[in-house]
Length: 460
Ligand code: NAP
Image: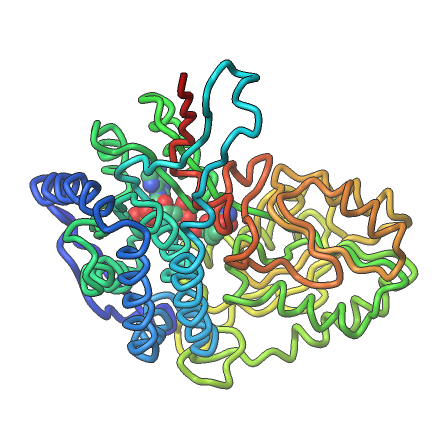
């Protein structure tokens, strides 16, 4: 079996190495997950909620250590790693508090209309769900699947990204430590090519994937070939539109955070800045100045704002995207190159203008701190540029004009529109995309229902 390595992206140093799990071990995990499903049902909502709160307490009590591992394995600035852990514990409690309410079915008011004495719906767990997860929010992405899944009574198996094995092992043990039945949630340390066989196993009921389009295609195809439900949360190239009436200082300040949080490696980072011509020069100058002033360095340092990219291949891909645009005539306003801090995989925060449709940046997701600028003459043009993308995850719209806001809310083709703010995930709100950003929803009431059988019950 291959070895799965944990490598510190800020230095290239190996932190730990794990043997990939054998086929026999994977088999035993699937069997244990399957056996845990009736045990989860026996616990009921109250028993599962008690354990979910215990898991949240454990995670919180270990927050400093967990945040340090996140930062060491994937390079997120430490303050953001701590915030990720805190948000994850919050989401666990949110589902502990709300799952029963979210999964209460409804009684038909007029059962005679369907020739019944009574008719109702109920939400039943589907069984064992496989989660294939990315490294960029290595705890949060897992929790936002695991908390609703376990609270609904499903068991979970996690195939985490290969570059975050330490987090994968930690989180694979967390729920059992909080007294969930053995096997109810655990990690499989396996390479991506072994995912299809797990999906095909008859004991796996469904699959959820957060990751790239390529992974989405392959997991979606595998699930489709055996007719299993899939939720796919894929990439994004979110627009950030600024109209003349917007509060410019606030828009610039938010734009910098929206592009660079998580070192620019979030699906919902704003990536395309579509600015009305009346404020374009002013916005661009301030934005480029703030991007250039960000503190790059060791992500374990509290003062660092930009750490390294998580993988060397990610750094190479970002360089290629910028180079392609530069060769085809784009102007690099600031940045546009690697940054050799301590030999890690750093890329300088970059603003790039004069993008044309033949450039890869026009269509592709830039997964790192690279902002593309577009100048537009009207709201119609702004919406048309924003929607001329294969993706449709989030979008941000800045204006104080009520008519413009109403038109943008309706006209933006995306799973979310944030007005005078930046796209963020909240446990209280559904999250997901359209077009090649995927399908299905996570979080909130809609997310917990994705892996439930909505059963209709009719009584004569
Ligand atoms: P990735 O390479 O697709 O990896 C994501 C997960 O999928 C990893 O566990 C990976 O395993 C696995 N995987 C990759 N190829 C696979 C295949 N052919 N079959 C089965 N599993 C496969 O993506 P990434 O580079 O880690 O993450 C970045 C992408 O995720 C970006 O496009 C980003 O926008 C997207 N993302 C989306 C959301 C959202 O909610 N929409 C949130 C976060 C990130 P290995 O690591 O072993 O290859």
